[in-house]
Image 1: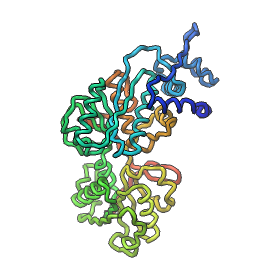
Image 2: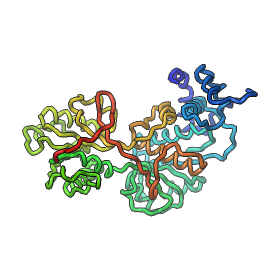
Image 3: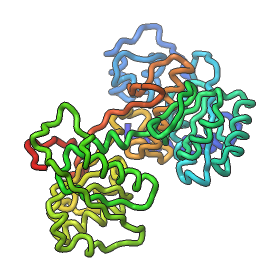
Image 4: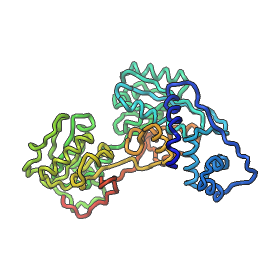
Length: 416
């Protein structure tokens, strides 16, 4: 499979131009001239002998063999094969506040496009850019989307933008990959939420924490919000559930908080010879580079951290290159990107798009998959529950090891 990557550069150019051109990409069709049926063993022989077109000619529909079907879907995407099945065109709109979400205006578009090109069906994916998230701009864009005949919209908005849409209360299906429903006040059956649950991640991480809990946060909205939730939850022990051994829980959980300004690079005042934080758990609500700086200085100033905790914010391979192993060996990261699809990973890679670590690109893909299911009744690629219009992601705890994130196994009988 890897040997074919060098041949794909023209496809990348076509894929990128599709987003800005109304000229359709030429399709390739493969005619099956073989008069004999081809079973799993026959298909496998074609694969092993690199007879890809013979394989595809006999694999004109979904295969029961999952490995073979994955190869089928990968080649359909790579070769841009046309479908012999005539279906109605899939039409999905993107609502993009490009000045506010920056690079995600492009990456969420690529995520949606990468998903749809793997499905071997005609589709239309149209972007509607808005200058701001004020009600006037959003209402005007939604009216244009509705006039153009789109009923399904992917909208990577901030909370302000989502609140405006809730106020407008449109009767069209809109999916927000950036916002969790816990942070919205809506009962509309048309609005769907794909944002991860930071509070659920925090509750799972706090079960691994010891007192004192030392919280570092920046002045971003998510940093301040999480630090406040972690403080309150740790003090009143609301993160506990029936599975927790309460005999290991301290009666008085202490919390110490430090706001770290963006330009701060030296934490000597907070860390050096500070007996109040010695052997505590350190919760990082800071961006990846700032988190790397904090962890290196925990080692430098001998803070003797019991562990370092972080939500999805720091699930990033960059962490492995900007920190020493000794600085991160006791770190635990919560992650909700737990389902992977190799075909979609590769189709995104063709557009230099990441759905392995980037959670917004991932949740965008999950949303397009859900809408695709509603439009076609085809099986979903992601087996993720939808409860009360919110995607419910499984959460796993990971540790950054020497070269990768590995599963974390919880310790027992921990002194808190």
